[in-house]
Image (cartoon, rainbow, N blue to C red):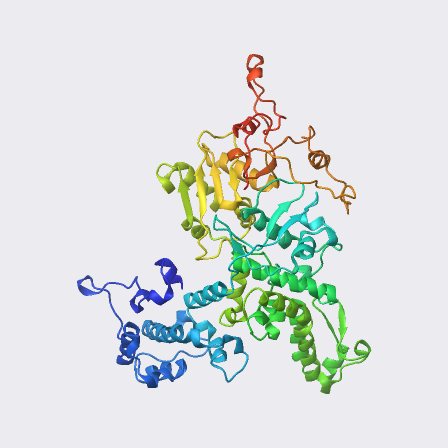
Length: 634
């Protein structure tokens, strides 16, 4: 896969020789080629002409073909189980790859005839393919997914149009009934959430208007709503959604995977399971619309989605204390050592609560003879404690994504399809970037400066930059067709902030004179621009009909209250909304940088007042720039 990416190709199009493009040249300047036995040469010939594959070979499994190739060669041996690719010889790797290409050629020809919905039945071909999913090339899986989704696409119709109220609180401070998640569930739970594509090519499963904020949704507000929901879900306050809990390693700040969240096993009422099913639908909508939902689930959640079996290792990687307890229990050398621990028939759940493994288990001591059953029951309880919640997630996912599309994906592949890449690869981001109005394109000084600044950012800041530019903190999926567009903002310089258009994944960069100034303005924009408005009157109010949104912990900031009433605060910050393109796009409201010195008295009549509304008799977007620049999001 890495070689294919280096060549901007797919795995299926690679040749065997492409595995080692950097071989040292031998005599006469020709690359040295390892001695490849005749069986491997046959495989390479079959790669070039798959139609010549004998019927007898077609009926054999990949393992038997590989075994036959290995037994006929002196220089190629079948790799031992668990051997990494780096431990194999070059001839062994070439033979392996040639056979994989033959196998995938056969798979690509028959996949349309296989009923993958029966993958759980061991006698079915679908089960055989699903059990070899790691050997199937990514492009074959991607083509299957694309055709399956296209076949289940709505030929016409509409998507829900929803009014969502973010209020004045950030996601982690909203009460459960005020969350964007619960509002959307109430408005769109009965919809299919299969997205439609607008004229701009943006796929949306619902169309959003944020109450109290301006903006026309061409994909950007839709993605913003998903980001809001992601933040609400992965929030550990006691009055929020509480559908998800931080994993034990996160709570105890120990071990690996401290970023993972797990379904709350206590949320098992009919209403709770309905919420989990809706979350599954959102995951399916995110996959179909290429708008990743940022969920940090462990393998315990993802594996059941694709029919993989969870093991005790999937529990211990997120719960170091449980791993330690198991090791001590398994390592007890004598009855005295076992009884000294005073173990009873109970286990600590993923939520930290104690569960009895048998009735009255917390008061019943585990005998030495019962230790194997005890350990087995502990593992079973931990593997099954979230089964109802995960089952509801899967049910919701499959209501949007046909089952046929999933069995060939590994759990990690599905995670990336739904949630995007958790880390931001700057090199990949640069490869999908297009440049507008920059003389010299990517070689322009401002562009070079931009990538230098981005590479110097923390992972958190890079995520904020993506969120500012296209509404999501994660990279677009590969082959999604999404491109970051860098636009040269002519006439804007060091006194201006960058402008973003999330509907079009576009960032307008002023002509900054140094990397330090660019870094300062970018960081200010991506961290201080959260609300949305334009030069039209915002739709509705930030507060509901019953009055101001109830505060849970801290008093409201007066600046936001003033803004909600329709005016500009004269307090700590100067809030401005900068229009763009006649006001049909939406803008981010931001706290401006310190304004430039006031104009001389003679020029005062020609200068727009800093607190004037840009929509009042001024159609020039630079009206707001006089106060330090603007951040626009559409």
